[in-house]
Length: 254
Image (cartoon, rainbow, N blue to C red; front, top):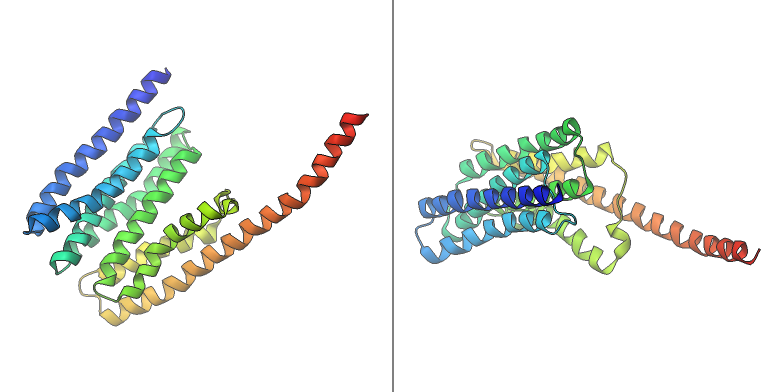
């Protein structure tokens, strides 16, 4: 049974990688004339799908679920979005219509993988992590696209998640899991919505700037609140640990 699940995971990852390579190479050849820049753009997309693949292949035991397959499809769309965005930044101009199309597809599928996980009873911490990581990659790709049209300050939206991960390497307390939060989910959904709105053809630049100017402070608030909560929980556990240790030692002496 376990070998079947592991084989299924490898097949799912291989299918996602093949899908991106096929579509990504075609997109690169279509919109990026320069071969050198094309390889850079495809490499950006490969980094996205590669991170998703590693997330599944390093699971112990290795497995993939129907919801993971939906998330892998999202990762393929995000990887293509990253390829188009980087290609546009390097070659210019950014084909915002195509970025919006790919980004919207990935964003809408975000509501599907969680529902599939609940309906099939296959929700897992690993699947949640893959989903969150794919969300982060989408927001980063879209923020890079808006940086070329609105201004480089919008990169703050896309880099916030990765800054949080980087700080967590030096502050393990930030790696702890937090309970589900409706506010966090809403603020998280606002970010790609605002980015896609700002990139949508026909939207006046001033409206796009206003939308992103409102989204960024909300994101800072959300990450700041979570950081404070994680640090508070860490300090609470640290205070309780000596008491539990002392109680255990006392019981051992009875």
